Length: 76
Image (cartoon, rainbow, N blue to C red):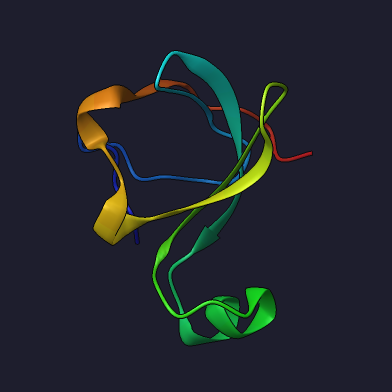
């Protein structure tokens, strides 16, 4: 389970703001299975935004001060 700074649990389809960019959470990478699917070693969020495309935001490097949960979206 991964939570945003306000304590809301992250879910696929969530709308968030990261460094001023509006983004959608594509996937929550918080288990061994999910890390294996994506071929990554850390927990984090796969996010997509128009300006930069699909990006992995590892929890260890996430700048939570610049991340804001906006609203719960429906997974696409």
